[in-house]
Image (tube, rainbow, N blue to C red; front, side, top):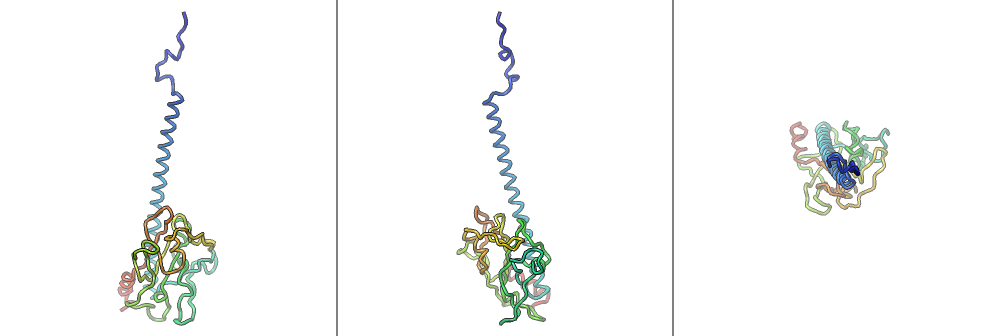
Length: 240
């Protein structure tokens, strides 16, 4: 009598997986792992953006505090000075021109050493800084500006779009995860974005763009509102 094959006698649960079943299991695991990685990546991006916004807000407070103490906003630092150089992070010295004691440049990087704040943003790059001339002049014994002073910086929703804020005294830019247009600790500037809105934040003029992140735009901005600055100055009895 012919003996039955062992596999025919084993219950299905004890036979193991077929190639088709193994393939299906691997596909399911891949989908689950991929979904988890995407989720973790998104969570990391949100966390970094929140941390960056917190840092920008704290630096804005430091800028206002500097104005209350000194009667003016600081000049930008030289963006090309490498970290460790004597001039790195120090506001550039004013020049005796007409009007006197104005900043040599109104665009540059945040003067982190002058303010006593961090040099780099969350992504390891310097933050761009633009200041208005009337708010950064150095006048002995009095504030550089008055309650009627107005800045010249504008923030829009796109490079040629609706204004979000105008007559701003100063603006601060973190160039985001892609870093395009930002200066590195070496003093070298990263390539400027081909996105017109993002490039607007790197061209050293008075026009800036602030909007939600897209695939090509990831800059974060804060600016000093004139009303808040004036209120703080009045409260500190630096303005009438």
